[in-house]
Image (cartoon, rainbow, N blue to C red; front, side, top):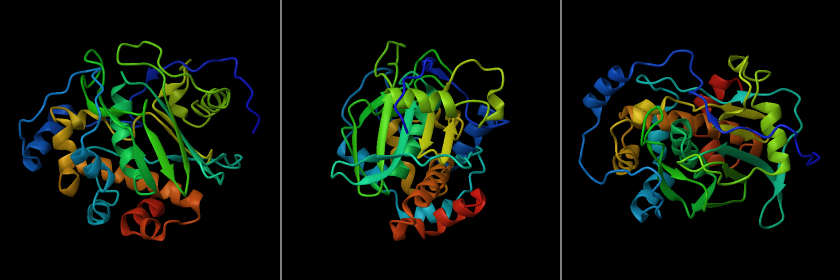
Length: 292
């Protein structure tokens, strides 16, 4: 695909998660109270990026297979939306560090965005099944936006290595809406083409490209968070990450279900590799629901 600069530069504006109806925050909190043990740890300060601790890195990078399989695509407390499949689009690939031509997955978002904050949790968990992140830093979404101070991570200084895919990310603005990273000409073109009402009818009448946006090799797309960031409300990063080993946690269910959907999309791109991921019960359930 030619890397032609698109005349319309994407505008970093949050889009609510891809849900027709959100569950009221009060109901979510009520469900959380039944499942999640609240433990006071550290507070989250918007805009303060620090290195992810070894404990959290291990928890988000090594979610037990049993959790993925138990959750599958079940998330009673908050609806989880799978990636949207395209038809007849050219497959997007890129060269890995070793020079191998692999499927390319693109993430486009911003640090201030609460929907991006939620999406990063599921995306990091999903991609960690196919490779490894280094250099992730902590981040919290804007204190003045929806779901203020949502604890999350930032991809700004992160690198990702995998023998199955190439992952590239753009954090377009920081927590204060200052310019941060700029999309390449190709990324601009893909965002302007795919993050639109042609692929997401709910965007009809919107004159900007919403975030977060994800492009799975032009074969699957995400516009808006896969689940409502409100489900993370009131939780610390430590609580969310630590809870990923508990399949009954509503937060874990939202993250794991989304990660299974994203994993199913990636498995379609990799030809079912690695087998231990792609043939797992949770990913197979997601693939069946997506019709792939």
